[in-house]
Picture 1 (cartoon, one colour):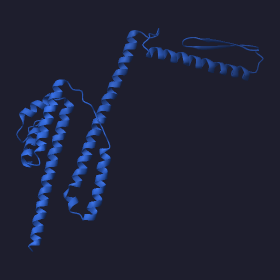
Picture 2 (picture 1 turned 90 degrees about the horizontal axis):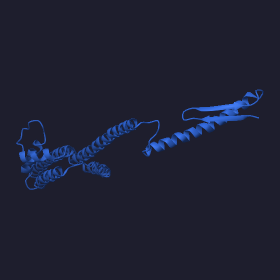
Picture 3 (picture 1 turned 180 degrees about the vertical axis):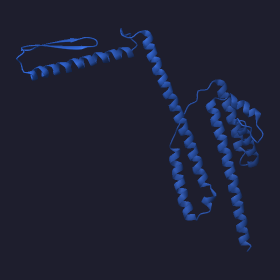
Picture 4 (picture 1 turned 180 degrees about the horizontal axis):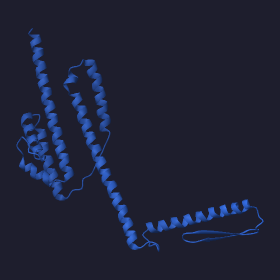
Length: 249
């Protein structure tokens, strides 16, 4: 008969096999293997319990307070890097969504779209509308942390832009000049147009992320106005051609 003695310490595992030397070697190793498996599982459970204890904020004899604090700080530093990377990725996706919407609208309102036959234009318009709808199903939101001063500045900036956007239908040229003055207040290089200094003071007070969004919105509005002016000129030119054709010229 064999007697197995096992000793489980905090770091090492010992197995002692006592028995007649005449026993087959395979029997020795089978018994030893089973015992090692059992003791290894027991040691794993002890290690897991220690990890749970550490996670619950209890002190471990093998880890000092400075070591624990250093490990927690290192973990938080790594998480902060990942959090900022997540926000940057989400912001990039948000900008990509805006860019896609702008490009689809530009194609729908482009001169090339008007220069093709009705059947092809209808088919391409259906495709553009389908892409537009699918893009709009993507919702991306990155919340910006603001203090009360930044909140107030953002409301004022948004209100000024909305006022000019509402005037586009009545006075497109005047509204465009106003938008250009607002945009000039958002750029660092010297612009070729007058700067709205009041708006510049408001924008500087906004959060950095809001400043970027305000600039992008103004750029989109100006681009849409330019496209609208081109389309109006094209339509006017087509009307003149149609009138000349009707008069036999």
